[in-house]
Length: 103
Image (cartoon, rainbow, N blue to C red; front, top):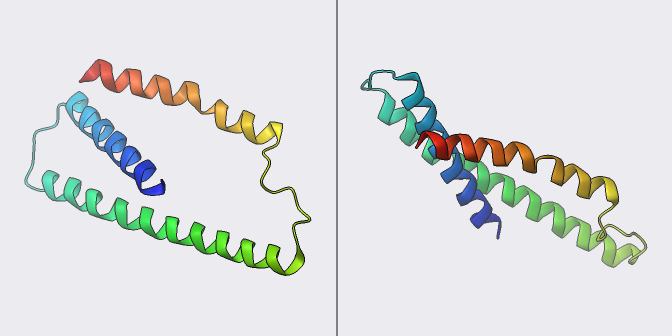
């Protein structure tokens, strides 16, 4: 699941980057393609490291829960967490509409 999200974010960033380059109307230089390719390789690497870190945190949490017992309610989202996620939706939609309008 995390790889799918990382891939979607990667595609979104590439489309946004290409849109910004087209909007700026910069001449294509020799270094443009290597910079884009470097970004395409670095981003999945960083995403993989982040996913690995999150998986390690989850394993540690499960081990602690096995030792202590299930006394916490960490699996339930609170109202504030749900609102925080939905606050980003308008911005994401506006960026997506802007990118789609430019392409």
